[in-house]
Length: 226
Ligand code: IYR
Image 1 (cartoon, protein in one colour):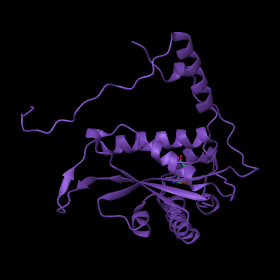
Image 2 (tube, protein in one colour):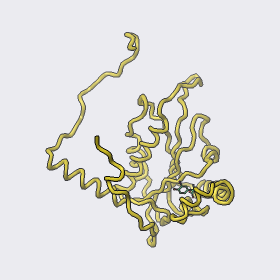
Image 3 (spheres, protein in one colour):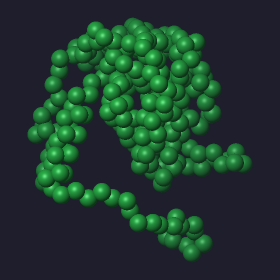
Image 4 (cartoon, rainbow, N blue to C red):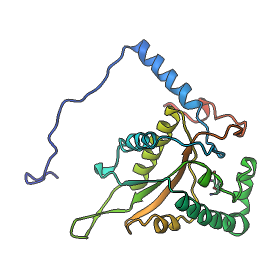
């Protein structure tokens, strides 16, 4: 219910680019082809990357739609080699525990074809490690909390835009989810309302990088029309 005292955003005309159908088809196909070339990269070059490029990708991620426009995210860009080393050590400790003790057999079976293990060289090789923190709730200036809505969905969309932006500019990334990720908030000194959501190393692929020779599902296997 809308009360007359509720603040309402002022509105302005939508800035929308309309194309003819031929051009829409061309753009749709070209974008698919570009995104279809994206691969998750697990071995990175140590070559440096201009920080402004990472800033542009984060800026793009920040265009994501979010629940009630609450923008429940913080992207921490880690370039400091000492911090990256700390993150790698902590992530590898969690991953060793995962692979050696915690992972159910079915999960290890599902991962086996990818050949992943507890060694996470990408964290120290890639020039940047971007950690996306989800705001579980907001904080008012007086320290009280404000409920946020659909924060996981919002952060998932922002992460997708970040991954697309990184790929589009000619860099590579990998969504990595060491579990549990509590150590990231600690090492990166984040406030209590922020929880690590995704860790994304960003850089150039190693010159000899290889990826699993796998195909994506054909459209008909995951798109249903009614
Ligand atoms: N977090 C672990 C395990 C892992 C889990 C999934 I699901 C993957 O798609 C890949 C890895 C790791 O990073 O090795």
